[in-house]
Every structure is written in structure tokens, then in C-alpha cells.
Amino acid sequence: MHAHHHHHAYGPTETGTVVLDLGGDTGALIIYTGRQLHGREIEISRVDDADAPRTHVAVRERIVQDGTFHSAVYPDLAAGLYTVWWDEDTPAGTVTVTGGTVAEFTWPTSAPSVAI
Image 1 (spheres, rainbow, N blue to C red):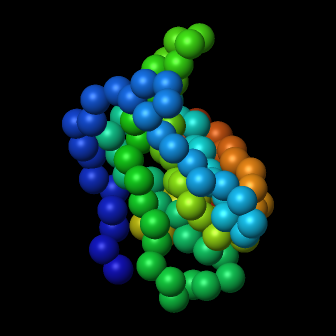
Image 2: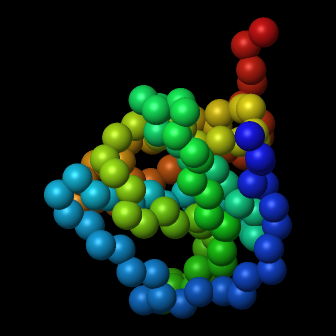
């Protein structure tokens, strides 16, 4: 499996530039990160389908009315439980996406400990 932890030089996005089509069994996910992850691609995958390819998007600077923040936005996700990947082999956590809503996940400030 190819890891997608590339870094890209994306400019900031402004209010209204990301459109989410929510409803039925379709939701969305926002992963909040710090500035240090700007441009990094973060992968997610369905917990119940280990063979499915991972989905990845890049962390972007988001300009909103109250200031700026950094996040990765995953639109149009099927409802279900997702693993958020710290790296190719280490999960950062899980998050439930519910149809018709936007799920939120805060990126951990340090690498998760892995049981040996």
C-alpha cells in the first residue's frame, strides 16, 4: 500500500469555498490540526472494510470570520466508523460519521502510543 503523507503548497481557502452535500446516509468529516500539518495529506478508512482503499485529503488553512484555522475536510462520506491514520501503520483514532451531519476530529498533539 502506498502511503499518501505528501506535503503540498496549497493556498488558504475562504468561507464558502468548501461545499458539503449532506443527507441520507452521507455525512462529512473535518479533522482539525495545527499549522504544522499545513499541506500534509491525512488518510482515513472505514473500520468495517480493511480492504477498501484509504481516502486522503490535504490540510489547508481555512479563513473564516473569526480568524484562521487548519483542517482537512472530507466531504461526501458514507455513514460509518472511520479510522484516522497518524501514519501508514498507526491509527490516530476513530470517528463516527453520521448521515446528514459533519463529524469532527481533533488531531492528537503527539503520536499515539502503540501496544507491543
